[in-house]
Amino acid sequence: MNLIAGFLDKAAELGPRPAIITGAGETISYEQLALRSGRLAASLRGQGVQRGDRVLVALPIGIELYLAIAALWRLGATIVFPEPAMGFAGVQRAVEIAAPAAVLVGGVYRLLPYLVPQLWGTRRLQFGYAEGDPLEELAPEHPALISFTSGSTGRPKGIVRSHGFLAAQNAALHDLIAPRRDDETDLVAFPVFVIANLSLGTTSVLPNWRLSRHDEAGGAALLRHLAAHRVTRAMVPPVIAERVADSGEAAALDVLFTGGGPVFPDLLKRLSQVLPRTDIVAVYGSTEAEPIAHLHVRDITADQWQQMEEGGGILAGKPVPAVALEIVDDEIVVSGAHVNKGYMDGIGDAENKLWRDGEIWHRTGDAGRLDADGNLWLRGRLSAAAAGHYPFEVETVARQWPGVRRAALVPGTEPMVIALEGEELGPQQWTELAQRAFGARAVKVAMPLDRRHHSKVDYVRLAKLVGRG
Image (cartoon, rainbow, N blue to C red):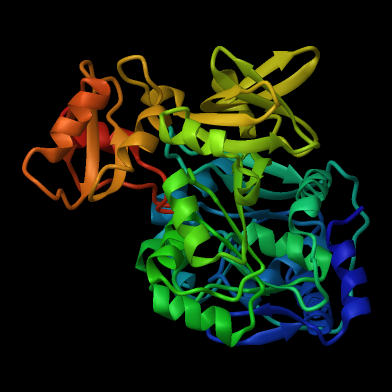
């Protein structure tokens, strides 16, 4: 099998339909993406790229990136993706772990081979075209790409995904993101979802903001982008969903998917008010297992809303059929065909993998519980607990206090300390509320967030910020 074969079948069927539209409005059709990726593959083969070669790819999120992905997979090469949020350090880490045979760079990354000593002497490929249409037949276990965890909970770890693994992931995503209409057009802020869309025949519109700086996206510009390209669905992290909610203006969206960080009940309520006709879906997953569960806001009962607002955690919905999920010592552990079974060179396996009933299970590091109806509830990071509570059991409550924009339990504090961001409406108001609700102390901070999606609290930095780390 070759993962790109499914896309080529769709390209032959869909022809001139737009496959990708960039943030600047540049468009490429399915037929052109298929044709140009074949010619790029022929050029790269002429430059010496062979089946099994590891090629580090650093290109801006755009049409050339997806042409490169398709071309390298046609040849059976393995793509090495550095973690963008880590900058040069991410490139250095990727080279140390994956030892690529060649590098393909462009745009703002064109000087990387000269600036990163680990790449000195590595063969540099040129982006060009030649006559040809290669397509290697590959075994399902043939490696397709190597990516890296964000490092937000430790040193980044390398993850190898095979063609069979990515096909299983696409299958797990199918029920969630399969097109519902012939002209389905998605705004996609998660690059991997573009790959899934290409196999489904959906048009993917890329963001008009820098993916490395989701926090800089403007609500008005975002709404104009949605309208200009007649976007029917959006796939965005919570920080972008917040921009939509803050705008107070309804977008003509059939569906809004949000994930990549906790989706708090107050955000879901605000989105429901601004987008009353939109199917709002919160998606839970991780780098190692995507998706794990998802939740349609329309399905949340009054009792479940109350549980979330009173500190029951965040409702994530039922686990997807493709994943096996259990709670072990409060931790969510998962297994399945689209769940990563191990890291490169085994680094991190001892801490993050379990052998259970002859299967490898992934430890998410998230505390959770299953209710009597089989719904998954998220309680927050195991490592960020304090005073007998997990983060979301406190943060869901604190986010409802007047003037609070973000809230975070400070790990390891006893008595409990709650960090709050926003505008306090009266002297000592937050301190009084924290004391009354949890016997806790409140501190005002500029909340440190993860570098990838700007949607998760960086608890390590937070603890240092308030003097606990």
